[in-house]
Length: 102
Image (cartoon, rainbow, N blue to C red; front, side, top):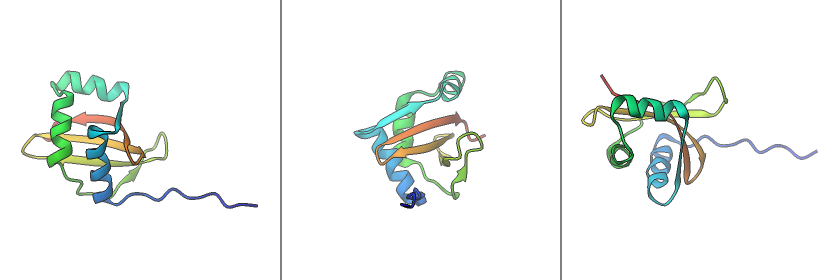
């Protein structure tokens, strides 16, 4: 019986690169929750594109309690912006929520 391949969790730097690539030649999927939070907080796609350039991932990923996928937090204090996301593949991310740092 063949073994199932376990999906390797990207490192923090790999996840940051995937986040950046998704806003370049990749794809970004928005949850309804993330769209709602963006609207409430006056955050648009340009802000997220800028975050993809200057943002950093400081913490190890955590499993999402709803999907089991590993979720990452990318942030930039100067922009007052944090985004929680999961990785679908090397060019596609799914935004879970968007928030201000303060």
